[in-house]
Amino acid sequence: MDSLKITILLSVVYSCSSLSVKLIHPIKNGTEVAVLIAPGAGIAGSAYNPLAVALQNESPMKLWVVLLDDFLVGAVNPPQLIQVVSMAKSSLMQAGFKSDEIYLAGHSLGGAMTAMYGFNGSGLKGAILFAAYLTNGNHLKDFPVPVLTISGDLDGLTRVTRIASSFEDLESFMKQDATAVYKTPVIVMSGVNHADFASGTMPSNVKDHDLKSELNQTEAQNTISKYTSAFLLCNMKNVEPTVVEYAKKVLVLAYNTTKALVTPLIEMKAMDENSQSSSNWTKIGQKMVINAVDNDEKNFATLEFYQPSADIQSEEAKIDTYTTVSLPFDPIDANPGPKSPEQLQAKMKTQESVSSKTHKTEYLKAATCKDINEAAFKYAMTKSSKEAISRFQKSGRKITFLNDTQTSSGPQWLAGNLNLKYSSSGMVVQSVVLKTNLDVILPSFAGQYYCKLLSPFRAMEFIYLDCMVPYY
Ligand SMILES: *[C@@H]1O[C@H](CO)[C@@H](O)[C@H](O)[C@H]1NC(C)=O
Ligand SMILES: *[C@@H]1O[C@H](CO)[C@@H](O)[C@H](O)[C@H]1NC(C)=O
Ligand SMILES: *[C@@H]1O[C@H](CO)[C@@H](O)[C@H](O)[C@H]1NC(C)=O
Ligand SMILES: *[C@@H]1O[C@H](CO)[C@@H](O)[C@H](O)[C@H]1NC(C)=O
Ligand SMILES: *[C@@H]1O[C@H](CO)[C@@H](O)[C@H](O)[C@H]1NC(C)=O
Ligand SMILES: *[C@@H]1O[C@H](CO)[C@@H](O)[C@H](O)[C@H]1NC(C)=O
Image (spheres, rainbow, N blue to C red):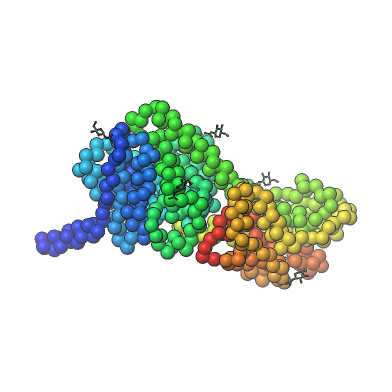
């Protein structure tokens, strides 16, 4: 029986021995700190050597870096991450590291695993998520240690449209605790992509999805290092107050520039995903369908019921529209694809249903679903940053709108989806419409105008990202 136990122990030692750690010794004296870096899937630990060097040059501290490597099938996983962190700690101690300031950083999958690491009671002082984020349902305010979320706006896997939600989480934490801007910063760097954190040839899943960086590796990694160093300085003990003050300024400036970068995305998303559960875009669409001259906007109600309904008096039409927002299926919040709604299933009233009952005589041509979709794109263009528009124009890709697909019954309309075809020439958009006359047998179905609409946030995500995605 004893010999069997020994066999099991040996096999554990064997699987553990595949892991490795590479210690990079500090180049400066000062307060001591160590950063361990867990790699992205299929990326070698050594690919983070240039980033480690940039970070050591940037940081005024006595900074050690430990590159974690040789995970099973090249993918950081929770049990091996626990093992390799303890290997890294022993190597540091053996080499003369005398502090307890140890931070765990991870890139991409390594970052996702870092976010899931059991920090409470681990002795680790903080987390650094390179092109990674806390997944849905996990909030910055509940994270047991300080955590930096940092990525680029040209990241084709960790989309800025996803990090915008992390930034919203930061903003809600900051309402309770203004120091969250130092403890749990969320930073988006302009011009940086997913691969910029590492070096060398990227695995195919990165190559296939990532956008083209606008910086060279040195510039990108110096930027990453500037923010990472400031995050460390703001959260470590025994740092000179003047140095901390400077680091705080760096993080506040990063907060300001990130806020400016993500605000158009957050505002566009809120058109259809908001706490009032009200689709503002459908309200705009309804106005376009009725298209009365001199209409007074206050008449368009915000209440939404399952069926659109209209209470029409001679002077006033109070219309309730109904919208179902279809979000992309992504149960574990790890899909590199678009984050914006796939469609808005909008139930509106026809122009005739209003014009037949009001005294108003002047109506212009009623909008089609296609017209509303074109307006969504134009609206997204007016709200996009100059930089996003310039990248979109440079991409050469276009959005093309096809005539609406007609349906003749509710079930037929429900079964159809907004057709969004992405290709290397751009995106083709085609809506599905159901229009009923005023004289249909079922009065509650009279004068309905149903559209599968393009969400303006989806149009904006195309302008910001999908116009440059290589795999379409
Ligand atoms: C750090 O301090 C030690 C002891 O004073 C000294 O020997 C060493 O050269 C210093 N290293 C650097 C990089 O300044
Ligand atoms: C950490 O663990 C302690 C003891 O188990 C617990 O009381 C505390 O709430 C935890 N903190 C966080 C932030 O999870
Ligand atoms: C990277 O860009 C910087 C600033 O534009 C430039 O000074 C540097 O030479 C570039 N480095 C490489 C390796 O191209
Ligand atoms: C950040 O923005 C705030 C508010 O607009 C401003 O008061 C502050 O000076 C800015 N800070 C930096 C460092 O840019
Ligand atoms: C939606 O519309 C209502 C009323 O028109 C407005 O008060 C609200 O701010 C809008 N919300 C967004 C996110 O645009
Ligand atoms: C699209 O609709 C317009 C207006 O109804 C019509 O003139 C045009 O021929 C249609 N185009 C196609 C390709 O069906």
